[in-house]
Length: 276
Ligand SMILES: [Zn+2]
Image (cartoon, rainbow, N blue to C red; front, side, top):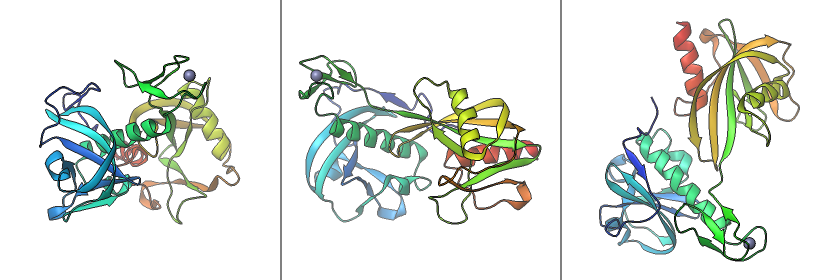
């Protein structure tokens, strides 16, 4: 069920001598968008051979590893592409391409974003250098090391019998309901985050938690850890300004929910499959 099988992608950050050949995949990002081959209606990454035809200037390039023996690079560039290629937000790839490509593109975007926002030491202001072994940057003056930043978050489907608690975030378009979610705070365990977020967002206490799985969510750098939780006690009280509405729903009366490409959609689907 998980998108990239462990034997499909071998991450590396030291580029081997022969990696940058014509068939290598370039995950090219320009002004926050990824450049894709769109010929034939199938979205694919650009190859190194394709890239040669673009009128683009590379600002940074990072070796990511091998996907099914094909070298993969994250490339930050600006300029214009060629016919048969177009740029789009990463979200547009979800559900429209091979899942592995989406997660590799998310990896590429996060490495580029980290590189661009960690040029100087946050402690002493000296220019940072690439670490000689790890995917890390080190300050030559005070020796501070920065690794790519991830923000762990929980996402939880609270259930009561055959009912699911779904909520509508105040910032979402009308009609969309989903599971509850929130960022882990420093000092918290993941389980504590689940209990705190559910109570803060809808005023309920939950009982037993069951870990479901995780999803890399590169908007911009989340790692979503998914749980099922049994309702414990309390009545729904929506958090002001955050949650516009929250209700108990049964399978036969569902509102608009997220697609199965998102872990929120998987959580809902798995519960419904289990109840059937
Ligand atoms: Zn420093």
